[in-house]
Length: 377
Ligand SMILES: [Zn+2]
Image (cartoon, rainbow, N blue to C red; front, side, top):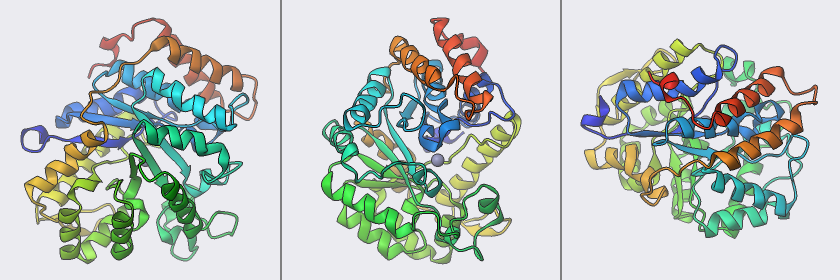
């Protein structure tokens, strides 16, 4: 159990797996991983903005929170379904509603190139100004995914997995990595006090100098170590420099895994989720070689205890201002899910699974009480 030596919160997991699993199983995956390894808590991040067939994500995340009230959840904005209000006031109202519903923060997946392509306008557009200003004023935690590994823009270097997932951006129809960064920086200049963490080391692990300049320039931003395997190979290439980096910026880096995958079964998700955490823990806490994703060995960073404690838990808690997870308001959650469902129910382009999941979540919420025993491990 990790909890004995280094209390851990996994700050970045997802609820996926609809191809193989029922809603109840999807909800339970991260709970079971957490129980097996003795994690203090997890934070599920909604991929609502992933596309029209992801509009069940906020519903699943709020059900997760209702079932496991000591866990955190971040909501995603609605852009796509019929009825999603894309005006400035509409986006502001969305964030307010998510907060009233009991979400603890906001997840932006919009700046992953595939999602960015779906947007009518980027976040520098005035229609997002009220929303960002509200997030900033209220210090609401934000987890923002920006770009992807640089090799994804190069057809010759892009990994097979990336190509299979549609994450190769070499055909010229996707935003360039630098265009995405430029927009993010203009948001940060305008809203410098956002309580924000950038996922996957802001995809700058190949350029530690630039990453460091970014952290110095924007003293309120944090980053997380959720893999991107290439991040870990980059750490391995310059171990001592990265050791220094982790120690120097120990207050700014969060632990996360991306656990909860779509294309594997419940059992596989639990096994792989646990080994992901065990592997990453070995990498951060020891100087031993650990088996990485591609079958090669990478040598651990052996970070000092104080750095590990910040990375594993206290930096996440700082983003929550030490607060426990918010309570779910099931009435507001029900109303919200009903409105999403009515926006997609007659839309033939939305897949049946998405609609069914919305209906299932509604059913579980309307029981007025989620039957906890169904979800226990
Ligand atoms: Zn993620």
